[in-house]
Length: 237
Image 1 (cartoon, rainbow, N blue to C red):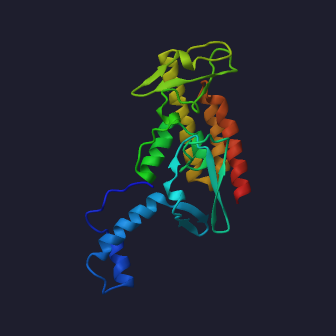
Image 2 (cartoon, rainbow, N blue to C red):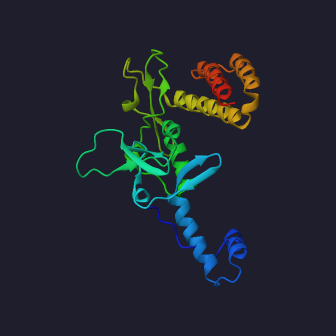
Image 3 (cartoon, rainbow, N blue to C red):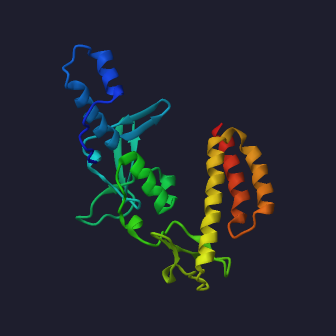
């Protein structure tokens, strides 16, 4: 169960809730409600999207997060169902992901930022503690077939452990910085599409135009990403 420091004063929302439903409540109730809400928000599970709903279960609330969890969960009606994703050894801790499945494919920085914002902790699981980000591979600049990886701590650094396994190519520091800059550009496109999914077709055309003047190792992913996103939006509508 995630710990939340005891609030020192009730929020305006807690005060309003108590005033609305229990005007004659003891003075200590708004602060107690604030504390209970903090515990609930950090330990609840998403239950429904329309309308947005969350639920809390006693034992599942004690399951720790891992970016490579050995279990997954889902609902059957209102029942919380926990299933193993792989073989679990005797004495091994059961873990789930507090993030959406697609978020597990994002970088260490992104995953940590999401968890800090929503669950108020810095993830130090084995995936996030590794200096080499296993889900942040770049197309090899040498053979154009394999993948290369970099170390991300206080700065970007090429690593012999991240060299291409097919041809042994090891990028220079300047090449690493260029790849990361282009990665940020791709991420910017995706965020734009998320914000304006209704006009994804316009962004598809814009991405094709941008590709003509933006040349680099990550260029080839722009058009496929745009088309995939447009297809996803058309199925969602």
